[in-house]
Image 1 (spheres, helix red, strand yellow):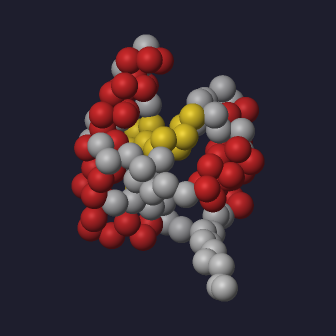
Image 2 (cartoon, one colour; image 1 turned 90 degrees about the vertical axis):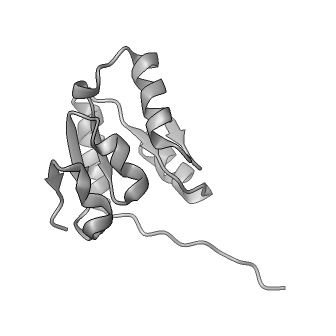
Image 3 (cartoon, one colour; image 1 turned 45 degrees about the vertical axis):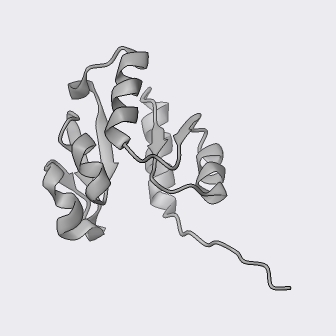
Length: 115
């Protein structure tokens, strides 16, 4: 019987950047539309305690986090790469999109990663 395996590549520079943010006192949260044990494992490796997978409405979860953490939208940053990210990208203080987001995720404005 063939066992199916899932593969996802993570950039070590991303991990370093997230760790540096945490070291500087920023809280990092994963919010993804996917559900995958790989994402949970990567979050655990990076010491990220809050992981929201299978998020159908990312803005709803984002708004709930704002309330729970007593934050205003302009006090947050968000990195996204696709259409479901746009509502959150348009609400945060610092919106960031991946270089390969193309036109699907660029409508949030802010910074665009070059690699």
